[in-house]
Amino acid sequence: MKVTTVVSTAVRPMRRRHGRLLALEQVRERLVSVAGLVGRPVALADGREVGRIVDVVVRRGTEQYPAVAGLVVRVGRRKAWVHAEVLGSLESTGARMNSARLDVRDFEPRPDEVALVRDVLDHQLVDVDGIQVVRANDLYLARVVDTERLVGVEVGGRSLLRRLAPSWMRRAPVPERLIDWGAIRSFESGGVQLDRARGDLERLRPADVAHLLEELGRAQRQELLAALGDHLAADALEEMEEDERDQLLRETTPERTAAIVAAMEPDEAVETLREIPADQRSTVLRHLPAPVRERLAPLLDLDPDVAGGMMTSTLVRARASESVREVIGRLAALSDHRDDIDGVLVVDERGVLVDDISLFELLMADGDAPVESLVGEPWPVTVSIDASIDEVVDAVLGNRRSSVVVVDDEGRPEGRILTDDVLDHLVTSPRSARRVGRPT
Image 1: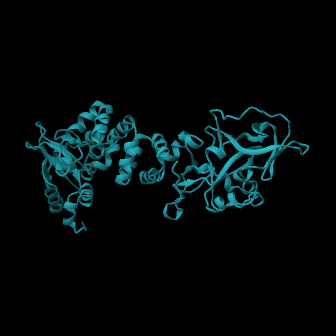
Image 2: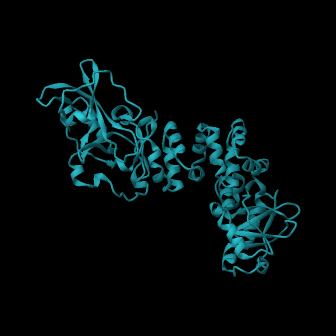
């Protein structure tokens, strides 16, 4: 398993931490190190030792702070099970039982249980408050309302050194960098399921999610990707470094890739599909919904260095006779595409472009007025579908518009190229970079 070192919070924005147990002084005063418990004695009420702690098991589920289910204890050559119900106390010096009841069968965790030392310690985790990938160097328990719970994870380097030190130094550790478990999201391969974190993840910015995906190992980032909604996953992939995105897509199933591609804007979807190996691309295309596949397939055949290969095909067309209110109503239904729409295209009965009306102009107009009343100068800036990148740049710079309209030979609009799409192309195209003085 790939182990990622802690990402410094100094370079990542910290999120406010609300309702965390570690903010309570009475909880901080009761912290017990899981790593420090390993090898500690488990004794009966009269003080007789019955074995040594091997692991601490918590219940898997949707609780923010998982409850301790019991201990794995080495008794002779066996690993016995001590249920939480018979634990009188659990302290840094060891555990005391209030009953002599032991399960002496070899321990095997049940599906709803997680062994912290085996499954979480030294594994990758996601801190959604600090927006970072961390390594669990130690874990901390505390008694909360009569129940021992997992409340924190230590990510500081000193905790690793402490685990190598003599046992007396591990008895009452002082955490160096402790993160509240309420901010932590773990993985199927190492603890609590990500399902309960869906809400927290959906509140992250796409750039933050992209950062997490880039830092995680293969198995963990696939689990994170599976926990994301299609639209957030699509936005996050657009923010990733190209080589990291390519690697992630190679590891992702065609079904999941198709769902993410279907949530992308057409131009981003086509760019993503072009980066996928040909055999994988054909499989992904088969899994796309038919309307999406029919919209993207023609765009894939276009040269990426011409206008048709750069454009988004998400357009809002309007007839001159429609009212402004009717058109605004259609815009509201396209809110998911707001980043690719900066105007409404007025077309005649043959679908030929008449005008390109800005959203500001539309929103300021009388709702009952016909769209026809807004037609006039400045007239649309257009390029042909096979126009070169140089022609597109000239059209943008020469007219100072936020976008240009791509039309076919008959003057019918096929797509739109936004200024930021032109800039993206200039930055990534060695041939075009010389136009803006970028070193090649």
